[in-house]
Image (cartoon, rainbow, N blue to C red; front, side, top):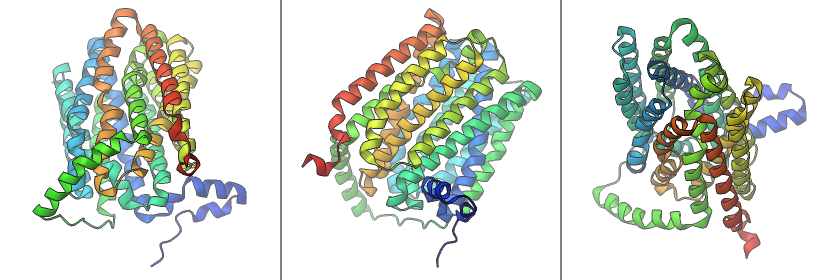
Length: 428
């Protein structure tokens, strides 16, 4: 039975604009992906509201950049330790069930956080413990979520679906922080945590509506053979220059490129002299820029072009981070943070697309677990380093150091990874 055209409203627009938009949003014509996307928008808005409220609460309780780094370290450490094992689970078991379980556990964690804040029992110790719990849930959820997209759309729409999925993430990243900044100022952080707990229901509902079939579990003999083959194949995949350089650039971005996000509360308070609403606007600007970067990726499927673009995106990121450290004007900072968000989004989502397009579907969970480790696993050390440096030399100089490291990493990628920018047929 033919699926209804989910992009039919575009026919009302001028032909040229309609063609461009149809190319950009092609994967939304898939019913399952469309339903999944709506659930993600709502659920992720709640997640971003909690993220902003949590960082502001930590800074309000301690007034310390080091404390922000410590909580960020706690939430990110499980990504380094457990993401690969999450990828193994994503290859062995039904990914939809893994996602449902993760949504339920996330709802429980958000409910506990809401209750602790409402009763006045919250402390930095509790925030660190809950950050560890949240990070562990994410470590097992992330590989399943990334490798679930090919189960929803065909390979020909995978790059587009990854770009749209990133755009959904960044739309939520724009709306959630802006709303959180307003609500924190009016009602406090507790309401944001409560809204996040309720928002998980949208994700659960959308997953329940999908028609994706449950994968059959392999026999013990088949699983043992698959595991033996997987160990050899994953190593060969990682040694492929087309993947290796993308992973190394992702690690450099994780270590140095994310530090501006950890320090946003300090930038808002000490550099711009703002309050919670300023933090919300800065985070929303980052999300809006990231949304733009995601849509650019969704409109482009040329692999060599995307590969080269990753390096140039990191050069833009370096300049933007340096500007964030230098600027004392809110509008300039908003523009710089928007550019940083666009660069990070294009680089990480583009890398995701390139890695997924290059791997055997049977190994997708493991490889995406490794990619997630390179992409996010080093961020706990980056968070601790950012907090420590900000206390030692100030937030502006910390951002200058981060920008310089990202800039050098981009130049190395563009220099040594340039052979992978050329299509295979041109190399022969």
